[in-house]
Image 1 (cartoon, rainbow, N blue to C red):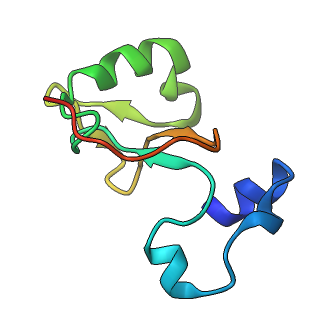
Image 2 (cartoon, rainbow, N blue to C red):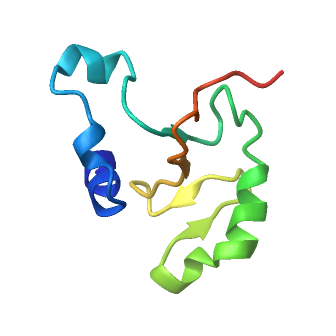
Length: 89
């Protein structure tokens, strides 16, 4: 999915050919998921839901800030060349 997005944005050709380089994150951009290091507070998901209105596509937010149906996912995807993973404290 991420390779497809990079391709649609016009810089998929910058992806490394070597799978080890892909695992070493030597590609452009980063995907930050709520509940993990860079975005540890799941309550922030409510702010995103207010902006994007996921109910329009049948996705709902529980009182515990979980997405339903169960296989639903969300993330903040940044394709700036200098975007890197980090941990918030």
